[in-house]
Image 1 (cartoon, one colour):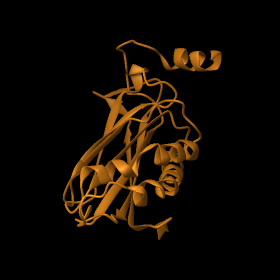
Image 2 (cartoon, one colour; image 1 turned 90 degrees about the horizontal axis):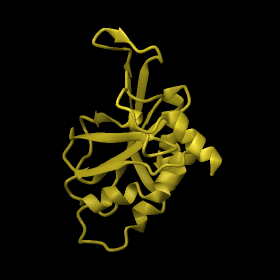
Image 3 (cartoon, rainbow, N blue to C red; image 1 turned 180 degrees about the vertical axis):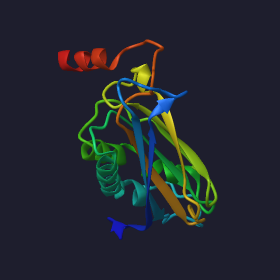
Amino acid sequence: MSANHLPIRKLYTLVDETHTVLGERDPDGYLRKVVCCAVIKNPYAGHPLAHDLSLLVTPSSELGTLLGRLAAEALGQPVESYGKAAIVGLAGEQEHAVACITSTFGNAFRTAIGGGKAWIPSNTKLGAPGTSIDIPLAFKDELWVRSHYDTVEVRIPDAPLPDEIVVAVAVANRGRLFHRLGGLSKAEALQRTTEK
């Protein structure tokens, strides 16, 4: 399987569902977070520093669409928050990971999950197989909704190999359970966006 010249070795999905906090059930329901990853070949691995990273940037839109569709399907309900991340193997450099999740990727991902107006939080790093990464989450239509600030961790035991990149997206069905630190509410944010 490949995504427009980005050969995919593996797809990996994680579902994290929390029902209680300290034994209490939130009246607004459970929190489901989904992470979908693609392990791709890095065309720049082991080569001298390249200034043009279009071999990763250009085809990343197809990857954003694929991972977005898989994540939305696994979530099984409307997406409220999102994030993205990438880990590059040791024969590459961090800039290769960043190249995979630029706005080319992000715009396709946003479309695949049903839209979103806010900037997509992200994280990248260099790592060996089994390296974990924290993917930041934020409300998809307004970055300043404090209830939706969250993180989900993922690791793939056999990836990334030195010449690979793990590209990941994360989505959630709601904000944190029992969020109670104030700030701009989801309802206020949605009202703002409809007034614009």
